[in-house]
Length: 172
Image 1 (cartoon, rainbow, N blue to C red):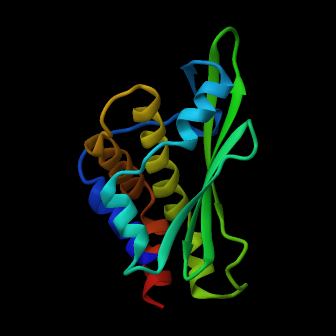
Image 2: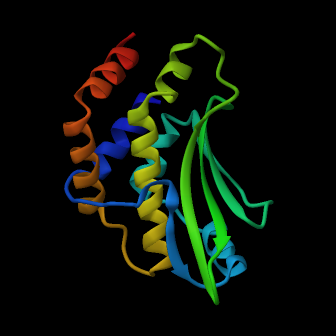
């Protein structure tokens, strides 16, 4: 898990990306076409490598629900958490995409991995990174590492207590 978060931070060094919170962002296209694009979306190589964690990690895509796509992040077969893109129709030929992180249910209560997965910084990194990946996919443009990095840097700078808590959890 530490590798995943540090890898995300390394990939994202640089820029300012504002996703818009849980209200999501509206994109051109019907829900079914947006769903199809997200279900087949590739993740940047650096992100996939950081999740891999020496061959122990994986990402499983769940696109069975026509109104959402989820990416399940796993280490040694245990789900650390998932990022879900909820898709809502918005008027003619528009879809709202809202991104949310949920800690994994597989992690034992009281475990250090669960404590890390539940940290607000992990949620912010996961949601910001995946929101930009979704944005770049649906807008047919390259992933903007600089923009994500600025967003994460701004979050860390404005939440020093959360950063301190996160560091204490990964070091324990």
